[in-house]
Length: 258
Length: 263
Image (tube, rainbow over all chains, first blue to last red):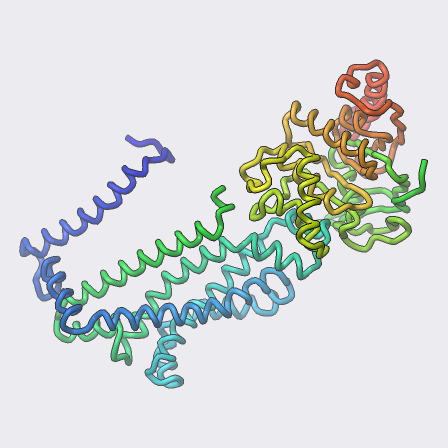
């Protein structure tokens, strides 16, 4: 039996990680190919791959993937560009925090998906509406998490900066921001994951392109293979973006690992 | 003896009571004059208000009453004219050792070439050559505190404030750090205010030891240390040193007994 908290080697880690994927697909294949689950409700892995290949080669699914990625990234960047500075200001200046924190805490619980009908009324069914769903879903989360991170900056580092001659602005610019940059990047990575769930919701209703649109189309045709392929693609893209984010963070903040 | 650089006039500090409790008087009205080039150690048991006094001089805390004057100007807040070294490791973890030492110089807007020159000279003085591009995390506690001293000195402050800077270090390292700091002081003759609860440290470094009493804090004794310079660690075993140590131990003992409620 392994001991609690005992580390495992890199090789064992990778092997174990991959083996669960294999186990998962094997269980799925056993249930479907073995005839335990009706094909109408759940396609088997081979059909799923065939359907996926068809989608990519015949139905221009790559374009759908592209447009969905664009929406997520666009809405997310919009949210981050506004939320990160606001979060830093809230974390740094307590009066600003007292002013905004109650509202942001309230707004955070407004479900982004519930805004979809309203946003269609306001912004139509164009790209703006999709971006806004992701924006609403992400912006309040980022603001609050960044504000908490900045507010928790080590007091003694701030005091040290003051005794070295920093001005109030200097403390924000040269202590609060660099001290929390890795954590802010980590927050963005986390919220980007959530943004992926909002984009699909936005595409399920009133959309004519994107992965979510393909999934809702496939439902009408009972093409479960296509639906599962779409869902798996989202998972894979999420995994890749997560990996990229981590790699960039390691590169940008070497002092964290030093 | 040269002129007074720092004047503490009737400074007291009362912390407001927590949750309706009675306010806590951390520091009784205190007077102290620090002469140029003095090395003053403030010695006292924990909770005697010695750190509070130092933080007030640094401008990080406000006195409830009284005022502190540095070169005739009243202290209203923290500033680059008073360098501070903290007990906790306060190097900026995202900056390298060289960048940490250069921090204050950059805030002052000193050009890069000159900055590098000053940084190189102080890295040398605290014996950290070859570590310029390391991050603080990669250094031992003693090396980090040496960097913190270099960072404070590079700013060329009028007075150097140290709040138990070697408190977290092991005994051997602490001894070496005391010699290093004393060596720098002997060469550069900075005015230093050094808070400690270690009696030996207080005597070894000081030209004057201020003993503080416990709760509420006030100055109990002001003892000049006339041991010759340069001082070597072997001095700690001389009869003169031992005699001072015995005297201060007695002074402190009474205070600790009072603070701990032992009679």
